Image (cartoon, rainbow, N blue to C red; front, side):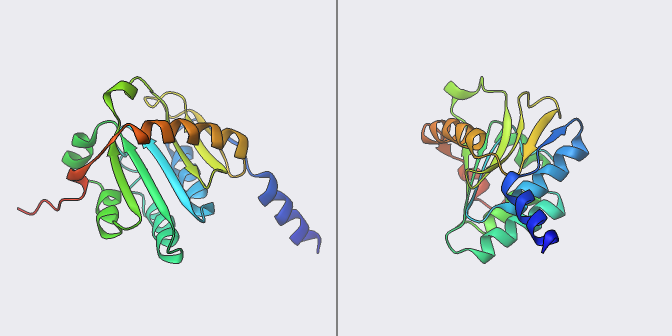
Length: 172
């Protein structure tokens, strides 16, 4: 019974981590995506290679989409052309699961936002204050902060346009 109580307590309080490098950020993205049961909101410059196309991250996203008919994944991208040029398995997955995944370009008026983050279910988040650096925080249960950034995300989302090029299959 003690083990179950400790596990439940850990789930309720979350796991806050200070992130200092790319690998820690990747692990945090996998952990936060793994706790999502309804939605993910992602704001990124270019769906960083090795993070958003990491097999563990993609598995967590697939699990969310395929286990919940109401799952929703929204992605705001500042530089979609770089993402498409370099290729990204997350974009390919988004094309296959287009009912669940939507990509948008960040509107010009919001391009000065330099943070990068992912929010799961208004509860968990991974956050970098400077998208050029890997330092940040993650927490699997921090609803107050997660809602704050989700509010920012929703405002930017409402003023951004769909990224139609992510829907098209470029076949040569």
